[in-house]
Image (tube, rainbow, N blue to C red; front, top):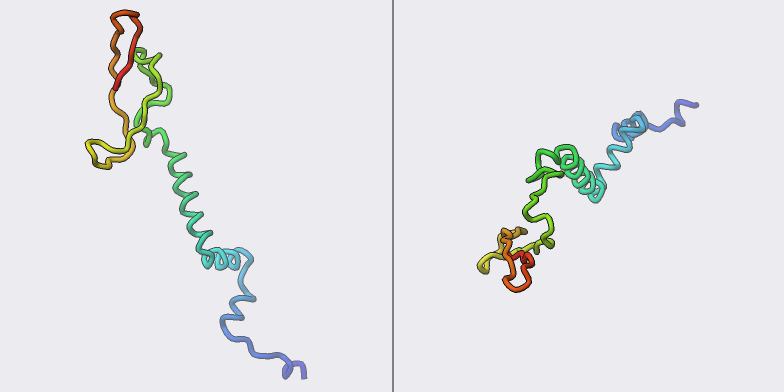
Amino acid sequence: MVLQSVQKINNKEEEFYLASQWTLMRRKFKKHKLAMISLWVLGFLYFVALFGDFIAPSNLVAYSSKIMNAPPTKIHMFHEGKYVGPFVYGIKMERDPVTKRKIYTE
């Protein structure tokens, strides 16, 4: 009588009931599109954090004593009317002939 009351379970349901907790969480996570995108974004950020010294264009503590008192440079996106991405122009130091103050120009 007990055997008659037990229903047959198909393979997918059987896999569901026999799967571990980690397997169930992984399946649910893979179905969630925003979670997968977030995983890739976080993976990229961790990659940049781990290899930041190699990726960075200059040393963190390096500085030039010639332009130590120069104001911050403007970040430009266009050069000669074309988009080239973020960049800065070189800085030139000049002296004002009247006041003898240093003037930094791009």
